[in-house]
Amino acid sequence: MYYEIAILSTPNIFTYKSDKVYKKGDVVEIPLKNKITYGYVLKEVDKPKYECKEIIGKKFNFNENYQKIIDFISKYYFCSIGEAAGLFYWKMDNGKCKIDNETLKIKNKKCKVDINLTDKQREALEFLNSKDASILFGDTGSGKTEIYIKLIEETINQGKKAIFLLPEIAITSQIEKRLKKYFKETLAIWHSKITKKKKEEILNNLDKINVIVGARSALFLPIENLGLIIVDEAHDDSYKSEQTPKYNAKDLAVYFGKEFKAKVVLGSATPLVSDLYKFPHFRLKGTFYNTKKIKHFRETFDEFTIRKISEKLKQNKQIIVFVPTRAHFKFMICKNCAESVKCKNCDVSMSLHKDKRALVCHYCGYTQPIPKICPNCGWNEFLNERKGTSEIAEELKEIFPNAKIEKFDRDIITSKSRIDKVLKRFEKREIDILVGTQMLAKGHDYPDVALSVIVDIDFVLNAPDYRARERAFALAKQVEGRAGRKEDGEVIIITQNQEFFNRSYEEFFNEEMEFRKSLEYPPFSRLAKIEFSDKKKETAKNNLDELIKCVGDRPELIGYGEAPIFKLKNRYRYYALFKGKNLHKIIYTCIDLTKAKVDMDPVNFL
Image (cartoon, rainbow, N blue to C red; front, side, top):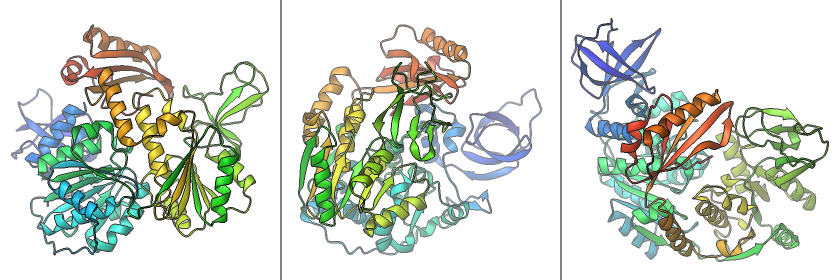
């Protein structure tokens, strides 16, 4: 017998032979060139004219639920079955997969969590329990985590298990500490940075684990009897994969919930307007400790801002300063021709890092010495524009020489251990002022922060993206929420757009929905971005032209041409953007996935 087999984690499909009977969904061990790998059985086929290699043996089987999910991922996100099936993890034994998912036995003991909810929290819990998929729309510090813990407790006591998704590994430590207190050894942490040995240990002990906390890959663990999926910080774009398959773990969590009849809760202080439109929500206002915040608006980083920082330092309070850009300066611009110094591999300006005495491309990592003359016109004078975290931190150190000031961005935070180290020092009050990028806003709990300063938020607001308004407003709200968790706090927003930021989320939501509806943007339609890239500009352009010719004059095609960042890592890029309600039929008719990448529901348009 002969079988068509999709090689896991690749787009390749090959035919193999065997005397044994296999069925769709079987994962088999197969030889491929000079190595042994795994493949997903698609179907039995007629004997081909060429010689085929033998299947070594069956390793496990995807049941019907998982087959349906794999098919959905493949079709919806425009990837191969092998790439979709390759997302999933299975039990490991000395590095090899083994069948065990059908024989797992739930051995849960009754769980008792000692948490007293407020009346409002109990009301929220009842609401979430009454819905299959819903949003916990709670202000920062309103007590969402306590509700999550009670939901997990109820799930365990029903003999089921829970997945707790977080957008990034950066915030797993604080959540782990809180949940470990209640669920002890039945809780496991899963993300890309844990060791292979630890992953094997977790996979081989899933029957003893009740709660998995992790980044988006935790969704693909073989958890039997799944009863609850919590997606915390559900607004975060990090749930979207930028690699093929370009799935969104938050959206897939809802699909998993339907398939496994598990409850899904999306939690956020700033839910996406599309989600708020689609799902029922419970509004949890204020903070758990009933603290108050005073909000100030300034147009520059002025004397008022410096005075407020000084006041908090004298009161022995902590301050966080948000800056959307790392490095010292975003641009180095020639005074004569006004051109910025660009990366040789990418069509982007390089950022100035004084400490490295270099310009660095934040896209490909290319580094070069700081030039003495303009590479465009030969002039020898430059302007440095758009201050980053490093420059702001240095300026604050000059103004407050006795304060302990640290940075919190990807130049400093290069591993999970470094994240934990900085946050631990901040928690112990060994840092007075923390200057960072949006990493500051990602769900961290800073109980002693009395002042949040938000710098250059207009840069986010003015980005060329239909979601720029939503991103800027949400980011400001998230950073704002880090101050005044246990005591009253203050917020300074430095902006030229006070009217935009000085309103409630509900007011923003109503205006944004009118804006989206008038333009028929999500949630009133779907978007698909198709990218063609190649080292040869002509090849990428020809591939785009083939698609446009096939699609013809359809209203769903709303734009095409060079990508905003035309050259990236020495590859030339062209985009075609589609908007509509039935895009798959149009795209599948014309697309060649060996020449293009399709991004459904894109979050990045650069």
